[in-house]
Image (tube, rainbow, N blue to C red; front, side):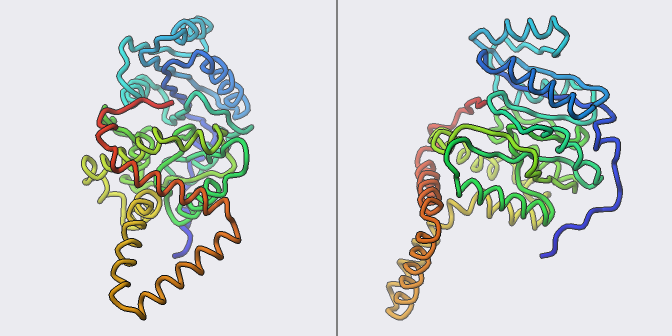
Length: 333
């Protein structure tokens, strides 16, 4: 499949944030990080030479000192503060922030992560192609190199080059406001659903490897709680957004399956094929020999990748047995 060809139509205003940029942050109990994040965003905006901007912080029922810190920032006229006294979850906070925003380009940022120099300027530059409706940053994890994470980033870039990547990095991404819809308040994977809204409008979702956000180490990032939320969110997508799935296009639907659902179905399909192979000695010999050779070669070439991939796949499969635990949406940073 050839790479996607740019439309040729340019949007030079959006590429520099010329029409104005609204940055939206959902905040819950972030007293240690929230002021640092706002200052970092101000620095990024200054680097980008954005003419007009606003930073909207939605305080989602924080019970620590976050609200007082945000009030202080509001008095400095650095942010616009929306306070929700009782916690309602991230999708509601996003909806509130979008409803209050003034400008055509929206940047969503989580609180915990840091970002590379010029990340926002780099994201905005991709809007020069008028076919682009959303631009995702690249997630990199602290600590030792994670070959599994690097493989995921390469996959996202390849998908992006072919048309659209399925989903965005929720820690930092930019989107044209005109393609958004209000999120259902029980939405679990808000960043994935927002990307699908953009694709539904036949606009591209681009992965930008030079706009980087840095997060916690591999073991902490891929916690059981996170994997459980992802699993529940993907099941919710099938149950509640089937109409949206069929409107993103066949190519993106295939990418979605390969990136999000294959890790659940591949072990089941392999197990079934292994059982069926037992009914034919010839097939069994080829099946098990090929499996041993493939796993051995891959393990010798990159043992850490194999270990991380097996760990993730096994853990995701186990989360299917715990779906009841995730019936209620849990707000995540």
